[in-house]
Amino acid sequence: MKDARPCSIADTLALVGEKYALLVLREVFLGVRRFDRIARNTGAPRDVLTARLRRLVDAGILEKVAYSERPRRFEYRPTDAGRDLHPVLLTLMAWGDRHLTDEPPTVIEHSCGASLRPVVVCGCCGEEARGGTLTPHVRAPGWTTAGPVGA
Image (cartoon, rainbow, N blue to C red; front, side, top):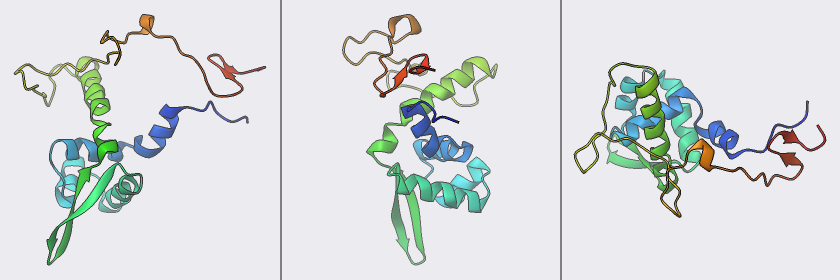
């Protein structure tokens, strides 16, 4: 089998695409940063949670910070790279709220007082990024939008 398309989505999913990794990030963004509470709120088995947290720390998405010396205990805080994932989770949540439930289990309120409705916009002009306004330009050698050259 030939190699799959080079893709930042695939590379990102390799780090955070597993269910418990995303749920850990949800908890951290909600302010839950200690292992026992993350375990309780995600339902992750402790060994699985330990592995996910280690992977997120090793990838530079979370940092492990001591909050107690005796006994030595840690909490998990987002790094700059981790904070950059927050809009992704908010967008996933909004999709689920629109398509999977009648009543969202959690509502995020913006500082203006309204319920948040995340929107992806162009960083240059501020226009909403929608399918008809986007044009992909494949930069991976040997690839087109349709797939590998000559296939």
